[in-house]
Image (cartoon, rainbow, N blue to C red; front, side, top):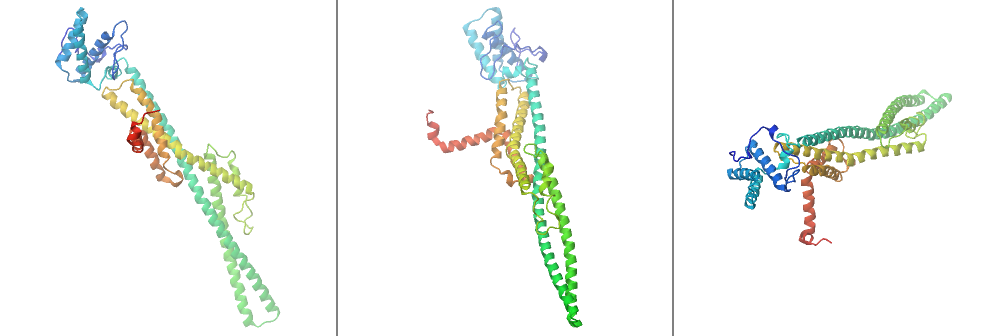
Length: 411
C-alpha cells in the first residue's frame, strides 16, 4: 500500500500522533457522527483517515485506488473543489476501505489500547471492572463452596452417627434383656441350691445345681462387662452426635439455633444408664422434637444452597470467564467497541439463569461428595456457553411449534 495525495491519508505516524476526535466516528453500521462545528462529510473524512492509519500500521491489504481516491477527495475538499461526483466517489472508496479492514471499525480503533485511541482509557476501565467483578465473584463462590462442603459433610456425619446411636441403643437393650434373664435364672438356681442344701440332699444332686449356679454367675459377669461396654459406646456416639449437631446448627447461618447447647437436652440428659429398656429415650420429647426440627431446617438450608445458590454462582463465573476471554480476543484483534458493553452486560443475568436452570435437573438429596460437583461443573459450562443452551431450547420450541407456529401471526 503506497502513500498518495496531499492530505496524507496513509501517513504512518507513531500511535501517539494518531489523533482522533471523540465526536467523529462510526462503526457497526452506524452513520458517522457529526463533528463539532463540522458536517457529516468532514466526520467521514476523519473516519477515513483513522481507517487508513490503522490499515497502514496493521499491514492490512487495501487497493491502491481506494487510498488514492480518499487522498484526492480530502485534497479537493481542502481546496474547495468539491462536487457531487467527487462525493460519490469518496463514499464508494470509504465503503471499500471499511470492507477491507472489517471486522475492525472506527469505533473499535478509538477504543483500542494498542493504537492509543481517545477511548482507550474507557476500555481499560471496562477491563478492570470485569476483572474485579470476576475476582469478587470467585471469592464469593469460594466462600460459598467451602460453607456448603463443610455443612454437607457435617450433615452426612450426623446421619451416620444417628444410625450408629440406633444400633448401639438396640444392642444395649438386647444385652440388658439377656442380663435380666440371666439374673432371674441365677436367683432361681441359687434358691434351689439353698433349698437342697437345707434339705440335706446328697452330693450327686447338689453338683449339677452348683455347676448351673456357677455358669450363670460367670454368664452374668460377662454380660455386665458387655453392657458396660455398650453403654460406653452409646455414650460416645451420643457425644459425637451432639457435637456434630451443635456444629451444624452453629454453622447454619440461616436457620441455626440461637442456643446450640440446647441440642444436648435430648441426647446427654437422657435417662440414667442403669434404667433398663430406656436407653434410647429422651428426657423431654418436646425438646427432642424441637432439636429434630432445627436439624431438618439446617439440612433444608444446605439443600437450597446446593440447588440454587451454588449453580447460580457457577453460571455467573462461567459468564464472566467468557466475557474476559472475549474481551481479550477482541482487544487483540482491535474489534472491541463500546457498543459491545450492552452484550456483555446482558450476559451476566443470562449466565446466572443458565446456571440455575441446570440445578433444576438434579436432586441434591441424592448426590453426595464428588457426585454433587458434577451439576456445578455443568452450571459453569452453561454460563460459559449461554448461546448453545438457549439455541437448544429454541430448537426444542421450534420442534413442537412446527411451521404453523413459525408462520402464525402474533396477536
